[in-house]
Image (tube, rainbow, N blue to C red; front, side, top):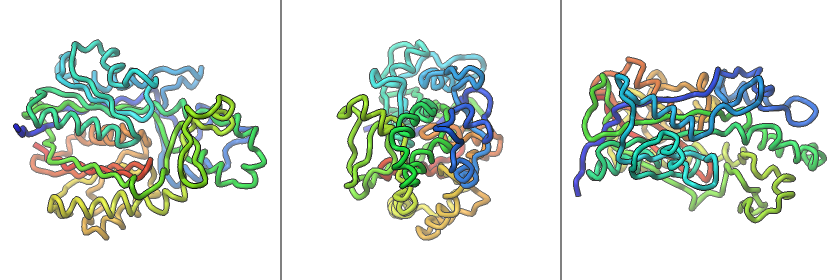
Length: 383
C-alpha cells in the first residue's frame, strides 16, 4: 500500500460574536433558579478562562450560527489569495453535539458550503471527535486515495448550557440538591467551562505555498473505556452502578426532571483518574512505541479543560519520563475558552499563524477526553 507524507498546509478557526467576559456569562446563558450560581466564581477562579465565545446574540438571546455554519466559516478561512476551498476529495468533520441527530454533521457542513461531490464522514465522541476526523483525513492522504482533504472540529455547546435545560430539575429536586450540593456542582461545573467555536485543517501530500507547513509524524488515539466507567455525558443519567440510562429510553417528563439533555461530569471520577490515564499511562505507551524523548519537542500544546490541571499534567509527564519544560508550552485557554473538539484546532491555528514557528521544530499535542477516559497525542514537524 502507498504511504505518502501528510502535510497540514493551512489552518483556520472561527469564534462567533464578541468575547464574553466572566461577569457577563450568566446574563448570556441565563440564571438557574432564584439566585446566581453559588459555584461559578470558584470554577472560574480555578479554570483560568477570562473570556470565551457563544453563538448567541447577547441582546436578543437568539442564535447567530448553527454548528454547521460555524464549521463552514472555519473552512472558508482556509482560502488563500482569495481562492475559496471549493473542491476537496474528502471532508471529515468531528463534533460532540451536531445540530440534529441525523443527517451527519459532515453532510450538513458540505451542504452549508455547497461543495461538489466528495467523500464525507462525520465522527462522534467528545474532544476526540475532532482528532478522529483528522486521523481519517490523514489516512486518506497517506494511502493515496485522497489528494486534498479537510478535517474539522467544532462545538455548539451553548444550547446545552442555557438555564432552561436546568430549570425543571431546580424546581423538581430542590430538596435533593440542598441535601447533596455535589449534584448541583456536577451539573453546574461545565456551564462555566465550555463554549462555542470551530477549526479546520487542509491536508495534502506535499507542502503548500504558504510560509509554514506541518508534517504529520503520527497520531495516536488510546481509549481506556474497557477499564473505566463513564465520566462526562450528555443525553443520559448515571445510575448508581456507573451505567447510563440514555434519553431514548426515557419519557419526556423524565428527561425534563433529570436534566438529561444537560452536559454533566462526574467531577470526583475526573479528579481521581483523568491525569493518570490520559497522560501517564498513555504517554508511557507512546514513548515505548515511538521512542520519543522530551528534548525532541520545541512546542507542547495541551488541551486541558482548566488551568487547575496544568500542574497535574506536568507531574504525570515527569513520571512518564516526558518532562517538557513549561516555557515550551502553548495554550490559548484563557482567551478562547474550552471548545471541546475544536480546541486543538483553534490552538494550532493560533500557533501556525503566529510567525513563531521555525523550520525543523517539532510539536507535540495532547488531547484528553473524559467521556470514558480516552486520549490522543499528535506529533508534527515544521517545514
